[in-house]
Each structure stands twice: as structure tokens, then as C-alpha cells.
Length: 601
Image (cartoon, rainbow, N blue to C red; front, side, top):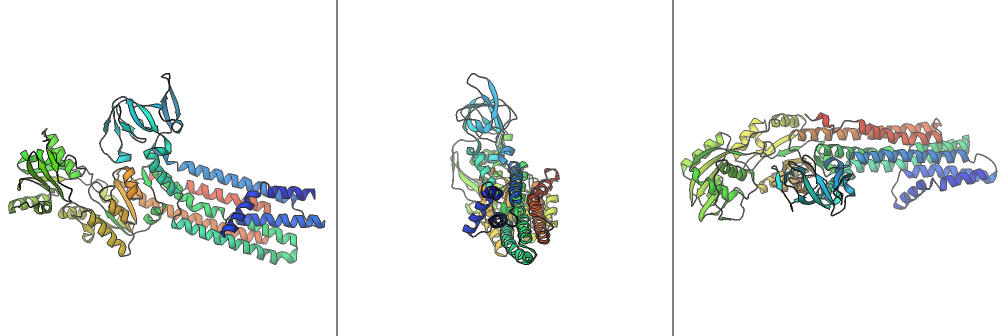
């Protein structure tokens, strides 16, 4: 009776967590991995108690106490492995500094954890260091690179009073910053929270594993009852021992852990390469094949457009530059830079008309100025004679984008703007097509220029669309989806926002993380096209890993059920083997080289 009391204390005390988990699962009518463990413990406890009262048979004192101990040790090992996984996907550690140099009240400096800083603290940021907090510059004048957060390609000058954000890189001089927000409360922290949520998101393949695990729990419980009935003739002790072993060793812990862990590790490893994945389903969709539409400017090309040819009256270039100096489009930037390279002064009296795709118009220094493509000028009422049309066609034949400048209703200047292809673009397109993706080119540039670029890259002519405004891009993506295709859109995080959001998977290659992740579930912060092929290849590796661990977990549990039924595995052996399966899955996931940074081509 004393032994029975101690055994019941072990089950009701330390083993209570398994009983509570099983009871919650029954109330929610959702099979849970604690259910077979609780059944095994309950069978042993009830049988031992009955035997103790009768004074005949095994009371299972040592077995139940040791079983609870081993099960809790296994659960502790499993939780430690999951904590390790959580640390591996701590994205804030990857993109913002863990430590900061705090300036103390007396003027001394000390290294502290960044998340221990308080509002109003002062931190010192040296050249080349990442800024660890959101705040305002108190002392110093420097330049910061905020490309990851906002997408700005050029360094920004900052001085006293300027706002800076965590994740920006101080480039030139020492800065002293007053802390305004730290950790999860920073702008980058809020971006990272979206990514962290994706690591825990239940994608379709994760939900499939959950459903299979639920069915497996019910099946194991039914098999345990069948085991008791089958072996009862050999003796209740043998029947109950084998049923308990079966219930414990077949707990589908590894099955439930394998899939979400693989997704979480993939998201964490990709973040180290500044490839941010907000939606866990994106990995599964990228692992398949379908149609992938790519924008041209800044995606397949360098995005650094330059005016390479000029025909006409160059004296009107300052008028065109003044009209476009506040526009964010790459063509406008090229025109402004062309004027700056010639040290031209820009007029200050500018009145810009409402934005219309294809160009910009307005009044500059009292003159009516229209800058844009041929169609835009025609819509603006500017008459183009055959000579200007022919010159524009010649520029197109030279793979330049023609931009016309009209002053007071008459064309005065024709600029040829070109943007070189990224050196890696042909190899990346070949890789994508070889892996089964139908690659298409979707650009707002001149149709003939887009056609030439597409032909150079080996893209089928039927999937080359030029002169596409944002509405056209959106329509093309929707039409592809209506045809039953899996559609991926790769483009600018701002200009292609509608098309990115409408696709099955949007991949933003330019712009900032903050804006891009609102429109697209994937953001490639480096802007390197090689990371696109790397992403697709490793999405398939991740899916392969999930299937491998899924199959291995099912095979392990099936074999364990057979061995427990035969009596080869005892309840104590089952308590040891059960957590080992989870540890094996965790180790396999971390050793598997999906999203290996060393494998970027």
C-alpha cells in the first residue's frame, strides 16, 4: 500500500502535466500527443491500485515512478532542443546589434544589451556599426545607410536632431544618439515581428502533419485496446504492460515537431542573408512550379539608369530635371543626374500636374513642360513629327528607352536612357526555367526594349509584356491565376505593389523591408538576383526535408507499435525511446543544409 501511494503521488504530482494535457485534448475534442502517455500512466496506476487493494499482483511502484521521471527528462530534452531552434531563428539578432555602447551619467562608456536600454539613454555608434535603437542624433554629423529598412540606395546625411532607426548603418563619423525605442518597439522590430509570426504559422503542410498526428493518436489508442484484448489470455499483467509500452513509445511528438521546426529554421537561415520571409506558405508555393513574372528595371537590370544619348536642344534639360527632381522613378533620377553631371542650375519655380503613368508634366519658370514617352506626349496634346518618331525608334533599336522633352507644345529634346542587365541575370533565368518555372517579363519600359531584353535572356515572346502600367501588371497576374497557374511576381516593393499582393507569392527585390513586406511575403534585401534562384532551390530542399522527417517519424512510430505489441519494448524502454525520436528529428533538421549560406551561387 505504501508503494502504491508513492506511485500514485508520482503520477498525480510530477506526471500531472501529461494528465492535464490529455484532459484538455478530450475537452477540445482534439487528439493530442499527451493522450497516449496519459492513458499508459492511467492504466498502470489503476491496475496497480486494484492489485494493491486485492493484495495480489504487481503494484507498478518502481515502474510508474521511473516512467514519469524518464518521460519528464525526455520532455525537458525536447524543450531544450526547441529553445535552441528558437534561438536559431532570432531574427533581431541577425539584423540589429545585440549590444550597445551606453554613455553613462558621468561620461563613461559601458557595453550593455541593447534591449536593456531605456528611453532617454545615450548610446555611442562608431563608423561601420549598425545602430541598435530608434532615436534622435544628439551629437555628430555622419551618413547612414538605411537601405534595408527603406530601400534608399544612397547614404543619407544626418546631424543633430535627425531621426535614425535600428538596423541602419553609420558610415563616416561617430554619432551620439538619444534612445526613443528599443527591441520589438523599433521600426525594424515591428518588421521582424511579422517574420517571427511566419515561423509559427500553420502552413498547409504543417496542418497536414497536425491532422495526421491527430489521427495517429486515435489509432494508437485503439491499438492499445486491441493489444489488451489480444494478450489478456496470457495474463492481465502482460496485456497491460504491452499496452502501456505501446501508448508511450508511439507518442507522435516527433511527427508534430518536424514540420514547423523545418519551416522555422528555413526562415531564420534565410534572414541571415537578408532574405526575409513573412509567410510560411510562401516556402511551400515556391517549392513547386508555375509562372514567374519578373519586372525588368532594378530586378533584371542594375536599376541605375543613365542618360547615354541626347538629341536636340540640351538647354531645356534643366527644365526637365526641375520637373522631375521630386519624382522617385528611376527615369526621373537619370534625367536629374544628367543635369547635375553637367553642373546645370535648376529653376525653382515648379508646379507639377497630378501624376499620370508614362511621364510628368507641369509648369517650370512660366513655361509648359512635358516629359515622358511618345504615348504620354500624344495624350498631353503634343504633336510629334515623323522626324522625332524616327529618332525615338533608332534609340529603341539601340536598347535605349526614349524620353522626349516638350516645351510649350513643341518637342525640343530626346534622351536615350539605358539600364544594363545584371551580369547574373542570364544564368538565374536559365536556372529557373530548368527547374520547371515558366519565366515571363513584365515591365513598364518601352515594348521593343523589353522584347529585346527578353530575347537576350531566352524568355518566350508570348510571355514578354512591355509598356505595362501598374494596372496592366495586376491584370496579367490575375489572368495567370485564373488560368489555374501558380503565379510568382518578382519586382519593386513600391511600383509593383498591386501585382506583388495579387500573386500567389510576391517577391520584392528593391525598396525597403518596411514597405515591401506589406505587399509581398518575401523580401530580398540584398537586391541580388542570385538570391532568387537560391530561394527557389532551398524552398524545394525545405519541402524535401519536411517529407523526409515526416516519413521517418511515421516509420519510427509504426515500427515502435509493432515491437511494443510483441513485448520487445517494455514501458521503461518506451519512456527512453520516445524523446529520442524528437531529438533525432531536431538534429536532422539542423544538420540538413537547407538555406545554407555557403550554397549561394
